[in-house]
Image (cartoon, rainbow, N blue to C red; front, side):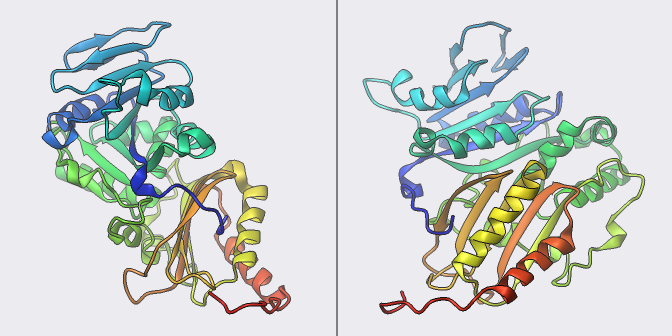
Length: 361
Protein backbone atom coordinates (compact mmCIF):
# COMPACT_ATOMS: atom_id res chain seq x y z
CA UNK A 1 0.00 0.00 0.00
CA UNK A 2 2.51 2.57 1.12
CA UNK A 3 4.95 1.86 -1.70
CA UNK A 4 2.51 2.10 -4.60
CA UNK A 5 2.99 4.74 -7.27
CA UNK A 6 0.33 6.43 -9.38
CA UNK A 7 0.02 8.95 -12.14
CA UNK A 8 0.52 12.41 -10.59
CA UNK A 9 -2.85 13.71 -9.40
CA UNK A 10 -2.48 16.99 -11.26
CA UNK A 11 -2.49 15.03 -14.53
CA UNK A 12 -5.82 13.36 -13.80
CA UNK A 13 -9.36 14.74 -13.96
CA UNK A 14 -10.95 15.44 -10.56
CA UNK A 15 -14.23 13.66 -9.81
CA UNK A 16 -16.72 14.92 -7.23
CA UNK A 17 -19.35 12.48 -6.03
CA UNK A 18 -22.68 14.15 -5.19
CA UNK A 19 -24.92 11.96 -3.08
CA UNK A 20 -27.89 12.47 -0.78
CA UNK A 21 -31.25 10.90 -0.05
CA UNK A 22 -34.36 11.25 -2.21
CA UNK A 23 -35.67 14.80 -2.28
CA UNK A 24 -32.70 16.29 -0.43
CA UNK A 25 -31.96 18.79 -3.21
CA UNK A 26 -29.04 17.28 -5.12
CA UNK A 27 -30.28 18.39 -8.53
CA UNK A 28 -31.16 21.89 -7.33
CA UNK A 29 -27.68 22.28 -5.91
CA UNK A 30 -26.14 20.89 -9.09
CA UNK A 31 -28.06 23.34 -11.27
CA UNK A 32 -26.77 26.25 -9.20
CA UNK A 33 -23.20 24.97 -9.31
CA UNK A 34 -23.25 24.59 -13.07
CA UNK A 35 -24.20 28.24 -13.55
CA UNK A 36 -20.81 29.18 -12.14
CA UNK A 37 -18.32 30.16 -14.91
CA UNK A 38 -15.59 28.10 -13.29
CA UNK A 39 -17.61 24.92 -13.92
CA UNK A 40 -18.25 25.47 -17.62
CA UNK A 41 -16.01 22.54 -18.52
CA UNK A 42 -17.79 19.97 -16.38
CA UNK A 43 -19.12 16.57 -17.40
CA UNK A 44 -22.10 15.55 -15.28
CA UNK A 45 -22.88 11.85 -14.94
CA UNK A 46 -26.14 10.80 -13.33
CA UNK A 47 -25.81 7.20 -12.23
CA UNK A 48 -28.70 4.74 -11.71
CA UNK A 49 -31.62 7.11 -11.90
CA UNK A 50 -35.37 6.87 -11.91
CA UNK A 51 -36.76 10.22 -12.94
CA UNK A 52 -34.56 13.26 -12.44
CA UNK A 53 -35.29 16.88 -13.33
CA UNK A 54 -32.16 18.62 -14.52
CA UNK A 55 -31.96 22.09 -16.04
CA UNK A 56 -35.74 22.11 -16.52
CA UNK A 57 -35.57 18.92 -18.56
CA UNK A 58 -37.07 15.66 -17.29
CA UNK A 59 -34.77 12.76 -17.95
CA UNK A 60 -37.12 9.78 -18.00
CA UNK A 61 -36.39 6.12 -17.39
CA UNK A 62 -34.83 4.45 -20.41
CA UNK A 63 -32.57 1.57 -21.31
CA UNK A 64 -30.29 3.84 -23.30
CA UNK A 65 -27.88 6.51 -22.15
CA UNK A 66 -29.22 10.05 -22.46
CA UNK A 67 -26.87 12.86 -23.37
CA UNK A 68 -28.14 16.41 -22.83
CA UNK A 69 -26.36 19.59 -23.88
CA UNK A 70 -27.19 22.14 -21.20
CA UNK A 71 -27.53 25.88 -21.61
CA UNK A 72 -24.13 26.65 -20.10
CA UNK A 73 -22.31 24.21 -22.38
CA UNK A 74 -21.98 21.41 -19.84
CA UNK A 75 -22.87 17.91 -20.94
CA UNK A 76 -25.05 15.62 -18.87
CA UNK A 77 -24.78 11.89 -19.43
CA UNK A 78 -27.52 9.89 -17.74
CA UNK A 79 -26.62 6.22 -17.48
CA UNK A 80 -28.07 3.02 -16.14
CA UNK A 81 -25.22 0.82 -17.22
CA UNK A 82 -21.56 0.38 -16.38
CA UNK A 83 -20.15 3.51 -14.72
CA UNK A 84 -16.57 2.33 -15.20
CA UNK A 85 -17.08 1.97 -18.95
CA UNK A 86 -18.72 5.39 -19.15
CA UNK A 87 -15.78 7.00 -17.37
CA UNK A 88 -13.23 5.16 -19.52
CA UNK A 89 -14.98 6.12 -22.75
CA UNK A 90 -15.99 9.67 -21.84
CA UNK A 91 -12.88 11.55 -23.07
CA UNK A 92 -13.33 10.34 -26.65
CA UNK A 93 -17.05 9.57 -26.65
CA UNK A 94 -17.96 13.15 -25.73
CA UNK A 95 -14.98 14.73 -27.49
CA UNK A 96 -15.32 18.09 -29.19
CA UNK A 97 -13.21 18.71 -32.27
CA UNK A 98 -11.45 15.46 -31.48
CA UNK A 99 -10.34 16.59 -28.03
CA UNK A 100 -11.42 15.94 -24.47
CA UNK A 101 -13.04 19.22 -23.43
CA UNK A 102 -14.06 18.62 -19.83
CA UNK A 103 -11.77 19.38 -16.90
CA UNK A 104 -13.99 18.06 -14.11
CA UNK A 105 -16.58 15.33 -13.57
CA UNK A 106 -19.51 15.42 -11.15
CA UNK A 107 -21.29 12.11 -10.54
CA UNK A 108 -24.77 12.44 -9.08
CA UNK A 109 -26.13 9.25 -7.55
CA UNK A 110 -29.74 8.35 -7.15
CA UNK A 111 -31.21 9.11 -3.74
CA UNK A 112 -31.35 5.43 -2.76
CA UNK A 113 -27.76 4.72 -3.76
CA UNK A 114 -25.07 3.50 -1.43
CA UNK A 115 -22.07 5.64 -2.50
CA UNK A 116 -19.52 2.97 -1.60
CA UNK A 117 -19.79 1.03 -4.91
CA UNK A 118 -19.14 4.25 -6.83
CA UNK A 119 -16.04 4.83 -4.72
CA UNK A 120 -15.02 1.25 -5.51
CA UNK A 121 -15.28 2.01 -9.22
CA UNK A 122 -13.05 5.06 -8.91
CA UNK A 123 -10.46 3.09 -6.95
CA UNK A 124 -10.51 -0.44 -8.38
CA UNK A 125 -10.46 0.08 -12.13
CA UNK A 126 -6.88 0.73 -13.33
CA UNK A 127 -8.06 2.41 -16.54
CA UNK A 128 -10.39 4.66 -14.57
CA UNK A 129 -7.75 5.45 -11.99
CA UNK A 130 -5.30 6.40 -14.74
CA UNK A 131 -7.68 9.09 -15.99
CA UNK A 132 -9.41 10.35 -12.84
CA UNK A 133 -8.83 11.15 -9.18
CA UNK A 134 -11.42 11.42 -6.43
CA UNK A 135 -11.75 15.04 -5.34
CA UNK A 136 -14.30 14.45 -2.60
CA UNK A 137 -17.73 13.18 -1.62
CA UNK A 138 -20.55 15.69 -1.07
CA UNK A 139 -23.85 14.72 0.58
CA UNK A 140 -26.99 16.84 0.60
CA UNK A 141 -29.00 16.54 3.83
CA UNK A 142 -32.63 17.67 3.92
CA UNK A 143 -33.04 19.67 7.14
CA UNK A 144 -36.81 19.14 7.09
CA UNK A 145 -36.84 15.35 6.81
CA UNK A 146 -33.35 14.01 7.63
CA UNK A 147 -34.14 13.16 11.25
CA UNK A 148 -36.94 10.78 10.33
CA UNK A 149 -35.07 9.51 7.26
CA UNK A 150 -32.05 8.59 9.37
CA UNK A 151 -34.34 6.53 11.60
CA UNK A 152 -35.67 4.55 8.62
CA UNK A 153 -33.10 4.47 5.82
CA UNK A 154 -29.59 3.11 6.22
CA UNK A 155 -28.69 4.58 2.81
CA UNK A 156 -29.03 8.10 4.22
CA UNK A 157 -26.80 7.15 7.10
CA UNK A 158 -24.08 5.75 4.84
CA UNK A 159 -24.24 8.79 2.55
CA UNK A 160 -23.57 11.08 5.48
CA UNK A 161 -20.92 8.83 7.01
CA UNK A 162 -18.64 8.64 3.96
CA UNK A 163 -18.85 12.31 2.89
CA UNK A 164 -16.17 14.97 2.99
CA UNK A 165 -18.69 17.83 2.75
CA UNK A 166 -22.21 17.86 4.20
CA UNK A 167 -24.63 20.25 2.52
CA UNK A 168 -27.66 21.16 4.63
CA UNK A 169 -30.64 22.08 2.46
CA UNK A 170 -34.15 23.46 3.14
CA UNK A 171 -33.03 25.19 6.33
CA UNK A 172 -35.64 27.89 5.72
CA UNK A 173 -38.36 25.33 6.47
CA UNK A 174 -37.04 24.26 9.88
CA UNK A 175 -36.87 25.90 13.31
CA UNK A 176 -33.42 26.84 14.59
CA UNK A 177 -33.50 24.41 17.52
CA UNK A 178 -34.43 21.51 15.21
CA UNK A 179 -31.54 22.38 12.89
CA UNK A 180 -29.18 22.45 15.86
CA UNK A 181 -30.39 19.02 16.97
CA UNK A 182 -29.92 17.62 13.45
CA UNK A 183 -26.42 19.07 13.17
CA UNK A 184 -25.50 17.51 16.52
CA UNK A 185 -26.76 14.14 15.30
CA UNK A 186 -24.88 14.45 12.01
CA UNK A 187 -21.68 15.18 13.91
CA UNK A 188 -22.02 11.89 15.79
CA UNK A 189 -22.03 10.11 12.42
CA UNK A 190 -19.35 12.18 10.68
CA UNK A 191 -17.57 14.43 13.18
CA UNK A 192 -15.05 16.14 10.91
CA UNK A 193 -16.93 16.87 7.68
CA UNK A 194 -17.84 20.58 7.43
CA UNK A 195 -21.60 21.29 7.50
CA UNK A 196 -22.44 23.91 4.88
CA UNK A 197 -25.85 25.56 4.45
CA UNK A 198 -27.28 25.78 0.94
CA UNK A 199 -29.90 28.51 0.73
CA UNK A 200 -32.42 27.60 -1.99
CA UNK A 201 -29.77 25.34 -3.47
CA UNK A 202 -27.16 28.08 -3.78
CA UNK A 203 -23.66 27.43 -2.46
CA UNK A 204 -20.20 28.69 -3.35
CA UNK A 205 -18.43 26.02 -5.45
CA UNK A 206 -15.19 26.82 -3.64
CA UNK A 207 -16.72 25.34 -0.47
CA UNK A 208 -17.41 22.00 -2.16
CA UNK A 209 -14.87 21.42 -4.90
CA UNK A 210 -11.08 21.08 -4.92
CA UNK A 211 -11.24 19.54 -1.49
CA UNK A 212 -7.52 18.78 -1.62
CA UNK A 213 -7.96 15.33 -0.11
CA UNK A 214 -6.23 13.37 -2.85
CA UNK A 215 -4.24 16.00 -4.70
CA UNK A 216 -0.72 16.32 -3.28
CA UNK A 217 -0.31 19.71 -4.98
CA UNK A 218 -3.35 21.17 -3.22
CA UNK A 219 -3.47 22.70 0.22
CA UNK A 220 -3.43 20.20 3.06
CA UNK A 221 -5.81 22.11 5.33
CA UNK A 222 -8.67 19.74 4.53
CA UNK A 223 -6.51 16.75 5.29
CA UNK A 224 -5.94 18.29 8.70
CA UNK A 225 -9.66 18.94 9.14
CA UNK A 226 -10.85 15.40 8.58
CA UNK A 227 -7.98 13.97 10.57
CA UNK A 228 -8.46 16.08 13.69
CA UNK A 229 -8.24 13.44 16.37
CA UNK A 230 -10.29 15.48 18.83
CA UNK A 231 -13.25 15.39 16.46
CA UNK A 232 -13.50 11.64 16.99
CA UNK A 233 -11.86 10.84 20.30
CA UNK A 234 -8.86 11.79 22.33
CA UNK A 235 -5.57 9.97 22.03
CA UNK A 236 -6.71 7.37 24.56
CA UNK A 237 -9.89 6.55 22.70
CA UNK A 238 -12.29 8.20 25.15
CA UNK A 239 -15.25 9.32 23.08
CA UNK A 240 -17.21 12.44 23.90
CA UNK A 241 -20.21 10.79 25.51
CA UNK A 242 -22.31 13.94 25.63
CA UNK A 243 -22.71 13.71 21.84
CA UNK A 244 -24.34 10.30 21.98
CA UNK A 245 -28.00 9.45 22.35
CA UNK A 246 -28.92 5.86 23.11
CA UNK A 247 -32.18 6.30 21.20
CA UNK A 248 -30.41 6.96 17.91
CA UNK A 249 -30.89 4.25 15.32
CA UNK A 250 -27.56 5.09 13.71
CA UNK A 251 -25.27 4.32 16.63
CA UNK A 252 -23.92 1.22 14.84
CA UNK A 253 -22.02 3.42 12.38
CA UNK A 254 -19.20 5.43 13.89
CA UNK A 255 -15.89 7.09 13.12
CA UNK A 256 -12.75 6.03 14.97
CA UNK A 257 -9.50 7.96 14.79
CA UNK A 258 -6.29 6.11 15.64
CA UNK A 259 -3.42 8.46 16.50
CA UNK A 260 0.18 7.18 16.61
CA UNK A 261 2.90 9.45 17.95
CA UNK A 262 6.08 7.80 16.70
CA UNK A 263 7.11 7.20 13.04
CA UNK A 264 5.91 3.82 11.77
CA UNK A 265 7.71 1.08 9.89
CA UNK A 266 5.98 0.64 6.51
CA UNK A 267 5.87 -3.16 6.82
CA UNK A 268 4.12 -3.01 10.21
CA UNK A 269 1.66 -0.39 9.02
CA UNK A 270 0.76 -2.31 5.86
CA UNK A 271 0.32 -5.56 7.78
CA UNK A 272 -1.96 -3.80 10.28
CA UNK A 273 -4.15 -2.38 7.48
CA UNK A 274 -4.21 -5.75 5.67
CA UNK A 275 -5.34 -7.46 8.86
CA UNK A 276 -8.13 -4.93 9.48
CA UNK A 277 -9.31 -5.15 5.87
CA UNK A 278 -9.34 -8.94 6.00
CA UNK A 279 -11.34 -9.19 9.23
CA UNK A 280 -13.50 -6.06 9.06
CA UNK A 281 -13.62 -5.31 5.32
CA UNK A 282 -17.42 -5.47 4.83
CA UNK A 283 -17.91 -3.15 7.81
CA UNK A 284 -15.46 -0.48 6.62
CA UNK A 285 -17.20 2.30 4.73
CA UNK A 286 -14.11 4.46 4.40
CA UNK A 287 -10.57 4.65 5.70
CA UNK A 288 -8.64 7.91 5.46
CA UNK A 289 -5.30 8.75 6.92
CA UNK A 290 -2.11 10.78 6.95
CA UNK A 291 0.76 8.61 8.11
CA UNK A 292 4.33 9.25 9.24
CA UNK A 293 6.24 6.36 7.70
CA UNK A 294 9.93 5.80 8.36
CA UNK A 295 11.93 6.72 5.28
CA UNK A 296 9.40 9.19 3.88
CA UNK A 297 10.25 12.92 3.92
CA UNK A 298 6.61 13.95 4.32
CA UNK A 299 3.28 12.38 5.21
CA UNK A 300 1.73 9.55 3.23
CA UNK A 301 -1.99 9.98 2.50
CA UNK A 302 -4.04 6.78 2.36
CA UNK A 303 -7.64 6.17 1.33
CA UNK A 304 -9.65 2.96 1.29
CA UNK A 305 -13.18 1.65 0.91
CA UNK A 306 -13.94 -1.69 2.58
CA UNK A 307 -11.10 -4.02 1.58
CA UNK A 308 -9.92 -1.92 -1.40
CA UNK A 309 -7.13 0.61 -0.88
CA UNK A 310 -6.26 3.34 -3.33
CA UNK A 311 -2.52 3.69 -4.05
CA UNK A 312 -1.09 5.99 -1.42
CA UNK A 313 0.21 9.49 -2.19
CA UNK A 314 3.41 10.84 -0.66
CA UNK A 315 3.40 14.56 0.13
CA UNK A 316 6.62 16.50 -0.08
CA UNK A 317 6.32 18.04 3.37
CA UNK A 318 4.13 18.14 6.47
CA UNK A 319 1.61 21.02 6.55
CA UNK A 320 2.49 21.92 10.16
CA UNK A 321 4.52 20.80 13.16
CA UNK A 322 2.15 17.96 14.07
CA UNK A 323 3.76 14.86 12.58
CA UNK A 324 1.60 12.27 14.29
CA UNK A 325 -0.05 9.60 12.16
CA UNK A 326 -3.83 9.89 12.12
CA UNK A 327 -5.99 7.21 10.52
CA UNK A 328 -9.78 7.52 10.47
CA UNK A 329 -11.94 4.40 10.17
CA UNK A 330 -15.62 4.97 9.34
CA UNK A 331 -17.81 1.90 9.55
CA UNK A 332 -20.27 -0.36 11.26
CA UNK A 333 -19.74 -1.64 14.81
CA UNK A 334 -16.04 -0.86 14.75
CA UNK A 335 -14.15 -1.94 17.90
CA UNK A 336 -12.17 1.24 18.56
CA UNK A 337 -9.99 -0.10 21.31
CA UNK A 338 -9.21 -3.31 19.42
CA UNK A 339 -8.08 -1.32 16.37
CA UNK A 340 -5.64 0.62 18.51
CA UNK A 341 -4.45 -2.38 20.49
CA UNK A 342 -3.86 -4.45 17.35
CA UNK A 343 -1.38 -1.90 16.06
CA UNK A 344 0.42 -1.69 19.39
CA UNK A 345 0.68 -5.49 19.64
CA UNK A 346 2.11 -5.71 16.12
CA UNK A 347 4.58 -2.89 16.74
CA UNK A 348 5.78 -4.40 20.04
CA UNK A 349 6.07 -7.94 18.69
CA UNK A 350 7.75 -7.14 15.38
CA UNK A 351 11.40 -8.18 15.07
CA UNK A 352 13.90 -5.39 14.44
CA UNK A 353 14.01 -4.19 10.85
CA UNK A 354 16.90 -5.64 8.88
CA UNK A 355 19.63 -3.05 8.30
CA UNK A 356 19.55 -1.51 4.88
CA UNK A 357 22.48 -2.12 2.56
CA UNK A 358 22.44 1.47 1.43
CA UNK A 359 21.87 4.85 3.03
CA UNK A 360 18.29 5.37 4.17
CA UNK A 361 16.28 7.72 1.99
